[in-house]
Length: 365
Length: 197
Image 1: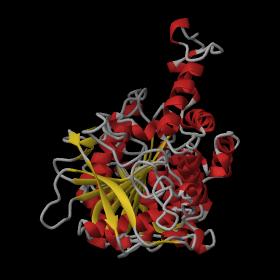
Image 2: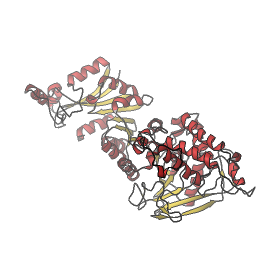
Image 3: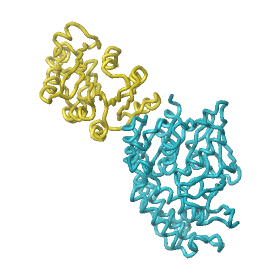
Image 4: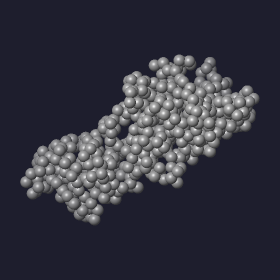
């Protein structure tokens, strides 16, 4: 499946939770499949922290494969032969949507660190405008993993009438203290990079690559699991020829170096900070004084919560918390805990059971 | 689940009530209750294939081992909790029943009767009973705490569970004179509606 993205401009603007306003904004969007006549077969995909709009297929320009290509496509769990699938780069991201890399209309320079703080609620509000653009009144389903799952959950709270089902995978109703702590280490690595320049690196034509790399290396450890690291790398030594750095001994070091390096080439540091802040700040029960049950009481969508047993970043108990609150609020919800040895990243992999449950949920009445 | 038993249970469930079915299987009972009684229904199941079937039927299902699972719902409240043909598989049936009646006003329990005459014959002949209600051989059964009708009703009395309704079914899943008159010997299964005192 070849895919191309398009940039959609929204002139109505957006009032953000932080109090700032964007008079207009743009979202980079990919779609797969065909919207049917009554516009009832739309499925919205929400991406995780470092994801983007390119969820499936092979992009025409860069030839890279979408981050959820094993889940989305013809005949796959999210079947593009049946459904019109939409994924947009989150506001504040660095893959084409309005964000720190965009030009500030007032200063005529890139926003950089001055791009306003964006929240999960803001993302959902911007995606609602995207629904209006496609004239989709009600999504068949909104789904995502991790930070994407938080968006799917928030969709069901913010716009109860606008979706039939929500798929919330490897997510939580709010970030834990430990989540915030991990993210802060990543941000600190970026801030302490001498090229960060207090967030104004774009004006000096440099990039805080070292900080971003360190942040990503830590991130990768948290997305992974002890088991999969043992299985993939063990205590095997890296062969001399393919060592990225001469100080490297073990394969796992080389892997983290490689992944961190690659990420620091493509991701924007201000976006990193903005996205992790949005993740830390999310609390589905923010408006109900911490009462998740009350927060979920307006929900009309059926919820599917999926946790993965090796995920220690957003462990299964976070999914169970949402399930319990939803059940107490008389919201239809299912909760399954799947074996997924890849830790938090398990939501990205198409294990048989995951695919079957997802298919069953999408197809169910 | 046969039609008579499903109908008995259906009749005991108030309209639009909130129901939890421990060991809900493929969700067919809950589907029936949702379609005909408009209940808010939730199932608890551990078997992967059955969970998938529930999801496909649009039934809310929670993957959980009942032995550990009842405690997780202690902050919840239901009108009716159902435990069909699973109570004898639990590690501590009497504690499970107490907990169920804590989170739910009423509780529907069905259980196989080890006092059923065919079981007695099997035992008299020196082997573990295998009947339609106890289909597995001794080495592969999940039943840990088999009991007779008399045993179960004795437990209810000593625990202070009120039996509001009861049906005794024979091994065809039907009611007949013998199974009603002498349930401990002629009922293959007991179906109970329990409540707190």
